[in-house]
Image 1 (cartoon, rainbow over the protein chains, first blue to last red):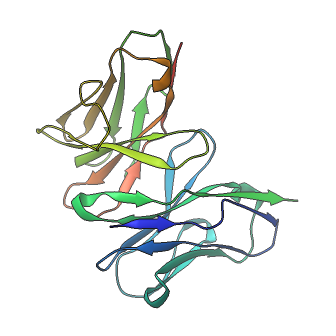
Image 2 (image 1 turned 60 degrees about the horizontal axis):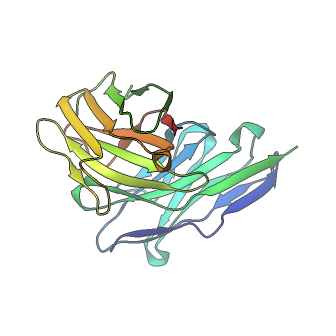
Amino acid sequence: AQSVTQPDIHITVSEGASLELRCNYSYGATPYLFWYVQSPGQGLQLLLKYFSGDTLVQGIKGFEAEFKRSQSSFNLRKPSVHWSDAAEYFCAVGGGANNLFFGTGTRLTVIP
Amino acid sequence: GAVVSQHPSRVICKSGTSVKIECRSLDFQATTMFWYRQFPKQSLMLMATSNEGSKATYEQGVEKDKFLINHASLTLSTLTVTSAHPEDSSFYICSARLAGGTYEQYFGPGTRLTVT
């Protein structure tokens, strides 16, 4: 069965510091992996996706993620966090019937 | 590109009434749309998958007679919450998948439903 684990419920970083949000997945075949960001009271915006090819993918807003098959991970990174990055981040894996399975989310707080 | 809209963004209704939420793909055709429900500080729960021209597929535990889904065109899906109760109060989000596309979904901004 497909599942996504985001071990960190809440992360606080200082503005300008680097960021890594963890995501581990369980899926029986080659996964399609996504990171979405949600601001309060808003829908989800796609940050980046991995389907195949280069395991390091670049996204919008300076984010990147690396697919590591051996670790079943797809961690999201940003070298320098901005105050506007404060939001909820969801990792998702594409499964059968074109569904997406979401992790429980990681809330990012950015302190000045 | 790939913009999805939802209307209304917020709605307050009385217990026992019905409310309809629209989900539109503005600049692409979507053969498949999804409806999610999100509780405060929680992840998204898939309620149903809506395919244009056919009946929606509901997830286990979701009452199909309570949450009526219609996908009448390639750009519009509607969710009607019938006989709403306070426990139906939630944030409802739709998403759309590009026709012929992969698993990528584009999300609407969500609808905040409050049942009094």
